[in-house]
Image 1 (cartoon, helix red, strand yellow):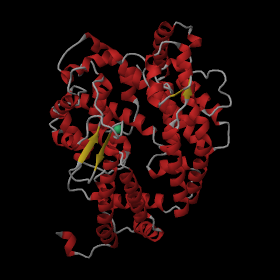
Image 2 (tube, rainbow, N blue to C red):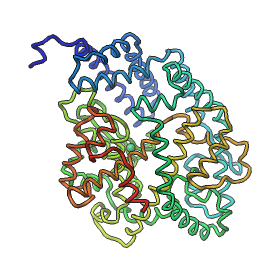
Image 3 (cartoon, helix red, strand yellow):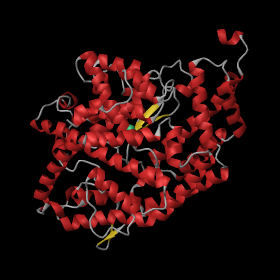
Length: 530
Ligand SMILES: [Zn+2]
C-alpha cells in the first residue's frame, strides 16, 4: 500500500496510536450504557460514569490540542478524510480542555439536578403524582378544574429546580468563556458546526412563513376543546392541551390507535425496511423491545462498536405512537449500519444529530401517512384519513415548541439575570400563541422543562431534522416520481447519498450533497404549512 512505502505524517502516526484507545473505551462505555438502560443496575450506573470520565480524560490534554491546531495549519495534509478527522478531533479536544475542576463541578451539579428531577412528585388533593399521572389526566380528564390542577402541579418542580439550573448556567458560561466564547449557547453551537446567528434568524423566518397554517390548527383545536370541556375559548388555558407544554397534538390519536391494536409492530417495521432492500431482523434480534421492570421507559438506538453491533431499545405497545417510534429507531439503526465500512473509525458516525434524526423522522412520519399506513398494517380503514391531518398538526405544533425552546435558551445563556419567567411566557405567547393564565408572575414555569437543565442546546436539531426529512422526500419525488422512501430506489438513494459518507462531510455539506441545495424549509412548508 502507498501509505506504508512513505514516512507517515506525524498526524497519521497520532491517529494510529490514539484512535484505537478511543474506540476501545467507547465500546466499553456503550456496553455499560446498554446494561444500565436495560436493567437499571446501580453497578452499571457507576461503571458508566467511570468510563465516561476515562473517555473524557483521553481528550483532556492541552498539549495534544495545540499540536492538532499546528497540524491544521500544515499545508502538506491534503487528503480530505485526514482533514476531516483533524477537524473532528480539534472540536472534541476543545470541549474537553476546560479546567478539570470546573468540569467536575458541572458534572456534580448535573447529577444533583437529575436526582431532584427523578424524585420530585407534586401533591394534588393529598396524592403524589408522577409525570405519567399528569399526562394521563391531561389526556383523559374532561373536567377543566381537575385539568388545571394537574397542569399547575406539573409546574411546581420549576420553583425547586430554577436555582439549581441557574447555578449550572453560570458554570457552563464560565467554561465557555474560558474557551473564548461569549456564552455556553454560542459554544455548543460552534462545536456542533452550527452558526448561532443563522439559526435564530432561520427559525424566525420559518415562524412567519408557517404562521397562517398554525392559526388554522389553533382554530381547529379551540373548536374541538371548547366543545369537549364546555367552556368559552378564553377559559381554555394551557391545560386544554394533552401534555404540560402544548408541544403535542391534543386531537386524535385514540382513534388511530385502534388501527394497530392487533398488529405486530416489529413485523410491520421489518416489512417497511425490507421494501428498501434493508434487512433489520439482525437489529431487532439484538434489540430490547418490550416493557420490563427496571428498564428505561423510552426508546433509543445505540451503535455499540461502529462495526456491526447496532441495537434499539423500545417498549412496544399497540399504539400508533409506538409504530412511529419503532420506525424512528430503526431509521437511526439502518443509518448507523450504512456507513461505508472502508471509512476510518472516527468517520463512521453521523456528522451531527440532524441527518440521523432526519432519517429517523422521515421513517417515523410514515405511520401518519394515509397512503402508507395500509401497507404498514396490512388493512384499510376510513380512519386513516385522519392520519394526514394529524401529521400536519403535529409538525406545526412541534415546530412552535422548538422556536420557544431555542429562543429561550439563547437568552438564558446570554443574560441569565433577567425576569426569565416573563421571558418564557412572552415567547410562549409569541410562538405558540398560548396565553399565560393569571397568577404565574412569580413562578419559574420555564424551569420545569427537563431539557433546559439536562439536555441543553439540543432541541433545534429535531426541527432542522424535520425540514431535512421533507427535503429528502422532495428529492425522491423528483427522482422516482414518488415521495415514498420504502422502495428499492428510495433505499439505494438513502444508502449511497445519506448513510455511506458518515462523518466525512459536515452536516450542512452532507445535506447539500443529498438534496442538491443547502438546508431549506421550502419542502416542509409545502408539505405542512400550505
Ligand atoms: Zn431520534
